[in-house]
Image (cartoon, rainbow, N blue to C red; front, side):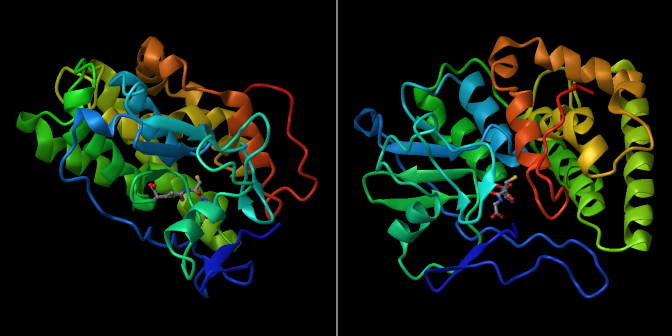
Length: 300
Ligand SMILES: N[C@@H](CCC(=O)N[C@@H](CS)C(=O)NCC(=O)O)C(=O)O
């Protein structure tokens, strides 16, 4: 199964995210709007469409849970793997807003001539019936920002005093680790793969050293920087080590990273979002990488 996208409202699988040298280049998300004011009346107006398996969506789910937004924003979860027509719903993973069968229907409800990828996460405005935003980092900032008034205010993931440091850390780790795993896994040539995997493990060594004497990436408290990195760490031994060939070592071999990951997983709101079976299913059903679609039984 090749990943598809919508072109002028029609589904096509005839596209690629690779350049001519075999490098993986992720297409930018299209919806980058914001929510300008929010009232008690807006309870139930917005929905967050996610997959527990997707690392970018996972950041938004963790933020949603940590801030206790479940009474205010609906959570809609897709099946944990991508069909020929993209993300889909089922009886167990139902679209509680429109009973759609495919996520692409939501994008088409926003714009019936939409051109672009059909990705999660999506923040949906059920009143205007429009997509607000489909970029994970912007969604978590909206949750921690304007939605904060309706949250439990237990965490401030983007504290003003640390904002620049948090943003820099997220940007650095995105390129060095989060997306580096994808560049390794989707490399289309031996040369690109070897170069990417080597760079990735160099960055993991650096991270392991950095975490030697600290529990959080920035300051002494949980921040958006930790939440942005964690989904990749949680997928590493479960999926990336095998399917993406990120296998110079296991993540377990990096003692400080492992401790950092385990400490974060001890937070109950984070623990409940970690669904390793759904993660394995998503990645091992990428037919381009695993033609049989067989999902391994073991845990790494
Ligand atoms: N930059 C986006 C990336 C989102 C993304 O790539 N999501 C993937 C799942 S891990 C997706 O929905 N892929 C489906 C597709 O491309 O067809 C974000 O951070 O929100």
